[in-house]
Amino acid sequence: MSGISLGFIEISGVVAAVDALDIMCKTSGVELATWERKLGGRLVTIVVRGDVASVTEAVETAKAKAIKKPVASGVIANPHEEIIRLVNLSASRFMTKDSGRSSEKGDSPEAEDSPEEAGAGRLDARTVQEI
Image 1 (cartoon, rainbow, N blue to C red):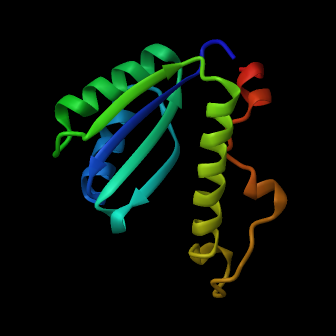
Image 2: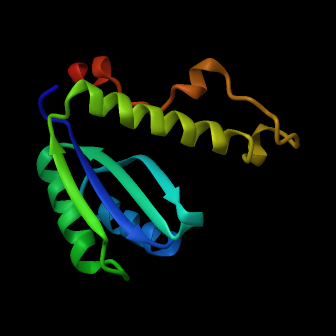
């Protein structure tokens, strides 16, 4: 599991969260792992993944340059399997919610992803160990 890191930014508002994510992705080679909206989108948590240096740089830059100051932030290097499981659970809910909204899947909001597509983008212990 060495080399993988997770970065967390909790910020007020969806627009500020998208801005922070944009800053993080442009700053270094990180990618969105998942996100959570609470309180009707008034509080948003963004989770990114990548190597330790990239994630640390991305989180620090977003803290300094985002349009709103984050409520909380953190970086976890070499996350424990339970943390990976928690992020995967969040990502699976995120992917499930968005699968019905995609216009590419057809006109029906009930359109389902195939099992291969449903697991796309998930971070698991096997994936982390292979990287």
